[in-house]
Every structure is written in structure tokens, then in C-alpha cells.
Image (cartoon, rainbow, N blue to C red):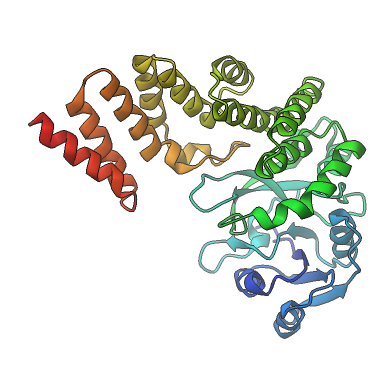
Length: 368
């Protein structure tokens, strides 16, 4: 029987009193050490950390997430590191510890990460050996990938999958307060690391959220150009997010995004969000038969098979939104009974969305 490795959970925090206690509860008894670097909290964050008995460090905030993360790594005394945030929760089975889930021969390991409530999980590299060669890079959306690749070289087998789950709660609710803070960091990040596609995606999304739509589209196109130079799986997945942003912007202008969607799906055929957008675009351009085919494909996807991919999707794309797409397409074709059945299915998936049930009943009454 192999020895379970020891694992330290490493966090950086600032004014996370609302979330921190729940995160620490999810870690208690699951990891061997908890290290928190506080970057200037003025709420109860520090008190909560002190009462939990963690190793608490303090570092002034210098607009650099990696610097703070690496301060935590320098203090680790365990074999492995889990990096996690206060607004995230570790999910393990009853009585399980994190060290039992790790292959000690690996260099790093993926968890199954849920980025937002109501979304599927995807693979995220959150576990890695405590090794001075592995350090974070990037002022925002900090990453250990460059360090990991330098070590593993042509041996991707040194990266392991695990059944460990992490849920992220921080994207639930309004995010508008973060946009002004993130914008200058992202603008600086794309200047310093222009080949990292995810920076372009987040910058484009931030500009769009701030109402600067032309700039958002220009940034997305520039990011896609950068993606052409790197065919790695991760870069392709991030480029697909950029395509989704462009599609939403085009649809807001009333333009057909079909061409760009098809190009995106040719690169990343497993992007089911793009597939849903294609169904909507086909419906908008008078092709309801093809829209129904796409809705049917989405309904047939087994969501449990998606958790080891690199993209996460809103469950609604496979459930009520796919049903609604099929329902509207059936109405365009004059097939009211089928439309009623699809709206009824949507109502079962999303009982709080009362308009689905109302439409189903209305169509059923007329059809009878």
C-alpha cells in the first residue's frame, strides 16, 4: 500500500470574511496544513483565519496575484500543494483525505472544477508537488502551467487526473463590481504576456460588460489571432471562449454569427455552448429543421461525460434551453403539439421559470 502524500492548502485572501469560514471547513481534516497569505484585509478575515489555527502570513498587495501566491508556496512544509480560494469548497467523500487521492509519482494533478453553480465540471490543474521550480506567473489569472511544462517536457503522463472536486461560488450573483478593478490588470497582462489567450478572453468580456462593445470585439479578434500561433489543447479551449464572446456581440447587433460559429466548432467540436448558439442562429435565419436537429443533439449529451474536458457549460444548454429551442422551432414549422411537449420538458427542468409551463398549457389547450 502506497503512502499517502501530505498536502498543504495555500490561499491568498483580502476581505473574504463572507466566504473564508466555509472554505476552511471544507479543508479541515482533509489536508495536513493550511497556509493563508492576507494582502490587507479590513474585515474579519484575519480573525477567522487566526481562530482556525492556520499558518497566517501577511504581504502588502502590489497588483500581482502571483507574487502573493508564491509567498504561500514558500511557506509550504508538505509534499504537495492544493491551491484554492476562499470562495471555493473542496469536495471529498466521507472520511477521505486529499493525500489519498494523489499519485505520488506525478508532478501535478487535475481536479474536477465547477466554475459556477449550475455548470458542468471541467479539468483544472490545482494540485502539484511542493517544488521550488514550480511557481505562479501572471499578475492576474496566475498560472503554474509554464513551470509544470518545463519540468514534465514530453512526459504528459506525469499529470494525473483525480476524482477530487472543487466548487467555485464567487461567480454567483452580480460581478459588476470586479470589472473596474480587473480592467487595468488585464490591459497590463496582455501587454506583458500577449500570447496567453485567456487574458484576451477576460479582457474582451470585461470591456463588453462595461459597455465598450467595439473595443471588446477588437480585443477578441486580436486574441484569436494570437491563438493561431499555439495549437495546444488549453489555448484552443480558451480561443473557443473568445469565439463565444464574438458570437454574443454579433447576435446583440442582429448579425448572423453562423460563419464564425462553424469555424469555432471546426477547431473545438466539443464546445457545446457554440453548438447551442448555432441552433439559435439557424432558427433566427429561418432554418428551424436544422435548429431542431441541434436541440436533439444537445438533449442526447450525457453531462457526466463532460467533467474531464477543458470547458464548462451551463446545464441549461442541455436541458431547458435545448427544449425551448426545439419548441420554438416546432412552432415555426406549425407543429404545436410537439412544441407543447418541448415546453413541458423545459418546465420540468426549470420549474421556477413559470413561462415554460404557461406556454405548454396554452399550446396544449389550443391543440386539443
